[in-house]
Image (tube, rainbow, N blue to C red):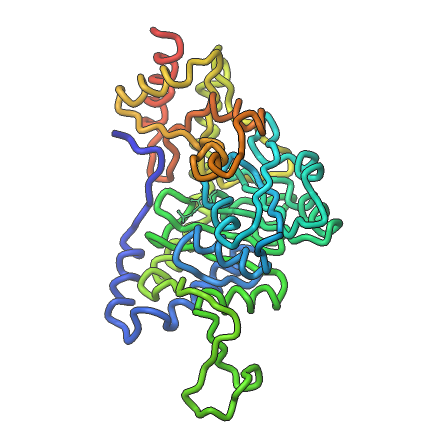
Length: 376
Ligand SMILES: *Cc1c(COP(=O)(O)O)cnc(C)c1O
């Protein structure tokens, strides 16, 4: 089965991990600082805090934003559930606003209509790798005294108006899961444009431990002393995985180029096919495409999905609207809330897209899609 996403690991990656294993540190050592510096350099020189997953990055980012009970977080339903779940786990109320019908990205005007005086964070997702109007979302959030969080789990390496993802939002979260644009096996990062937000993120991912005597309440306790002012968790990315990440980052440009080539080859092969719609583009974007979200029209998504799976094409669906999950349904969220997101979900199939896919693989997928859609 051809998977929909897959890591690309080369000999340099293997050597980097082996070197970390033979070093003095397995967990938080020099490889972590090196990786954070490299992530920052790839993301507009915004400081980066590494964590153990994209989900941890969201949990940390909402903590840094001070999100809690009584606060509202406006977000998109067309995302992996973690974007909403991490806010809800802090006690916030999640407010789902609808997406643009063509890109599947959170609609700025829908988000604007959902803002109240309780809105603490607007969280957009760069769906499939296409940045979600980051300048307009930053402006919208700030006009309401809120923060803009960009869930860039799909989009490290993407650019908007010539600047890299990470340069725009108060808080940007990344995922380094194997199917994403680069991997550390499990891993993630939070980018924070404000030093106060960065500090809060660093504290939350390391139990809230305050080590600087100047900042402690009881600094005379002894040289061993560290104290917790606000509770946190352990979300520290180990050196072994950070070393893999630094090695992977050297190929980020090559990954973006190859992903764009594959995306263009699918567009070329499927554009003229009746009964499907190829993904929307935006003039300001140079995406590092994470997904190729094909839309299957006329209620035929399931049928086409099943025949592609039967043909050995490991297609996926991204995503069921977040509030359809029973955990949100049980809180009273009703189907019909965001019609564009629901319509998008009902048509979407993600075709295989990863750097090691060959042109012949792509052509085979195109052929199977054409066969499944036309029945010939
Ligand atoms: C993958 C993903 C996450 C979670 O990242 P993990 O590293 O799998 O925890 C969050 N948001 C979106 C949009 C994702 O695609």
